[in-house]
Amino acid sequence: MEDEHDRSNFEDLNVWKQARLLTQEVYRLTKTEKFSRDFGLRDQIQRAAISVMSNIAEGFERGGNQEFSQFLYIAKASCGEVRSQLYVAFDQGYVTHDETEKLRQSFKRLSGMISNLIAYMRQSEMRGEKFIRSKSSP
Image 1 (cartoon, rainbow, N blue to C red):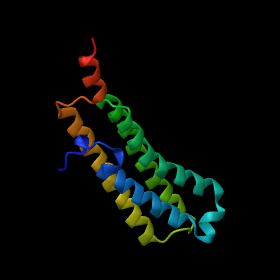
Image 2 (tube, one colour):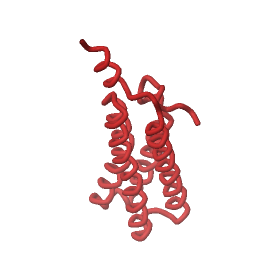
Image 3 (cartoon, helix red, strand yellow):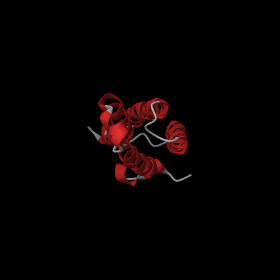
């Protein structure tokens, strides 16, 4: 497993890169004629997808493992939200079965990647920039 935590920018994290790609896919799907007219569902699934990548970025920028983990849990929950909303989109005929399954499985894999990063951070000796700064302060 790549050491996600030793990266210096959230843009370097594989989980963030994957979240970005999946957000692009959500936007692609929601641009279809039928889906784009369901403003509530369209906006909600887009916000949930954005939440995944945004919470990974915000948590990383907090500078501490505990806060990063909390934001990763929120990102993981947003993965579940997108998957649930994909069922609604499928039930309404906005997306095909194949589109639904492909994207649902992709978000499920991303959720697993996030879980693995959380587990890694719990076992890591590294505590983040905040911890390092507070130890070096007088």
